[in-house]
Length: 59
Image (cartoon, rainbow, N blue to C red; front, side):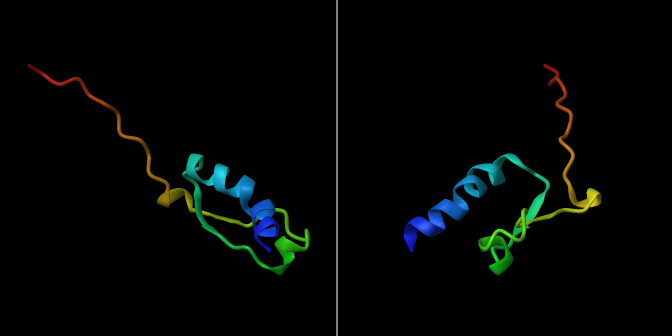
């Protein structure tokens, strides 16, 4: 059972930290059986944090 789960989740574990647009991952029967290609739920455009511009500090 462990190896089955590792096979399913390996790519996901490495993809999620680098993507700020993912808000949820759902592993359901369709994903496990290969009927669903993406287990991700993405954030709305308004929810994505835009990086703040760094400003130079004054002395």
